[in-house]
Length: 637
Image 1 (cartoon, rainbow, N blue to C red):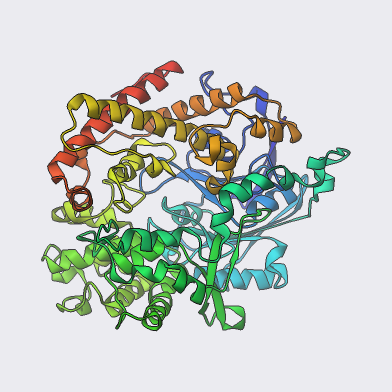
Image 2 (image 1 turned 135 degrees about the vertical axis):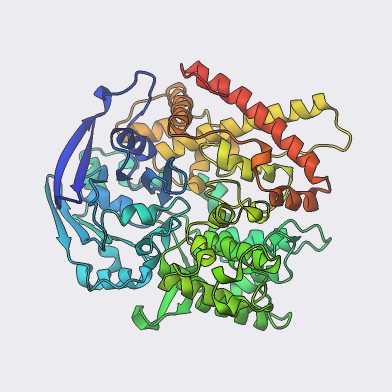
């Protein structure tokens, strides 16, 4: 078995093809890469070239849940970061006859790079470097420009990667968009990609199911998704409902009828949000215009609505309904409708889309980072923690803060056009934590997870949202960890707490091992749960479905071998992070605001929660250390 790579040399504007024999890799004997796809392929290649950016697919084309994995060293942390992105890129890598594209040898001089078009099918591949002076700066504008110029106006003809102004300003939160609506974000993928190119178009020659499976006459070869259709229906159907999707968490956590709200708002100074029912079924049914999914996927989990946009065909563009950007752009900024009616809520949403979210999307930065950073800026100004000279004049007035769409919109405009004259605004482009780094007195009021964080602390729905800030540091794969159940009873003894934490970390590691399998196969976390016991997303199901499906793709394996890979790869990933400078923080390193917000939800003093966090960290160190040593790695904690 071999993996076929396209190596693009951005400085020389040249390329070469390379094949990697999966069974004969040059590597540390402790390292495991299984079938060398997805995150595993990205990690192997990043070990060879830490400057590179890798775009890799998985080994199971045509199956629901395929993603492209984008691997790079994050400019926010200096650590490996992997984004699993939807759209058509995985299909186009297959059509190009490739398992991965490696962007290498970035030019050292500044300036906007050419855009790259890859077409044909390996070994007959064409790579063109084209002048980008006509390419619009807006991320979504660039997408439509390239669809017209390079694909004859047919979006389905290929896959398009684009940047926005944020990458050209050097913002560390700049993201990379695929098909305009899917993003490699949170780790600064846009800033890394901008070192190599201003955009990328993939346009291969179609590989059909029949051509891929060749002479195989099995039912699976005729329709791969039939083998998993029942489980997709059972475990994933809710995601496709018109009133489904992640945004429904907004009303569940932000407008509890009993007042037990757990959604942080006003920069996490409060819990709850009066208009949180913009995530309610009534509003969703009234405002949504459609839903879609990744190519090949039978689960249409990405719900969308139209937004007026002069750069798009027909004067309107598609915007997704997701929890995280809505949470950061509405609740954390304290934006409210003029009255408590459905019509007013719809008007508020439309105005926020037009004046806040669309400009951030065009800028090509992460909406969560910009929203949280703006909320922290508002609080810093309110409390006199930021010098007036570090912000534009419109922010020096008392009313320019929480609840002001006008102020938020103007901040984003300054960011978009370049904020070098206003250090406090420029810091937002580098992530919320950059504010705390520039203004140390803000360290405890930035609602993130500490130095170099890649994510917000989420909502405070249970003690285990504790695991949200915790997992950003201590987990290799942090998705779904917050679903671990548990509670600390009042008056629990130290022994009871220790036993509870032991179980929590055990479950967390089991979820991580399943997540490693998912990522190594470049699959979607939402759909990969079908391979877990009872669809719970914790343990690989022992019924052998994944083993059977891999067999159809020529990959002979077993449940035991899959779990060996998952645990070994987890251990080597943590070891790599340590070698690149990662250290385990204590609870004291996490901003006080995290514990203050949790305290409001859990009715326990912040210092008690800080103490519990240290106990949880100690238990992670113990169990993680055992897992590391099992595969021959020394631990430094």
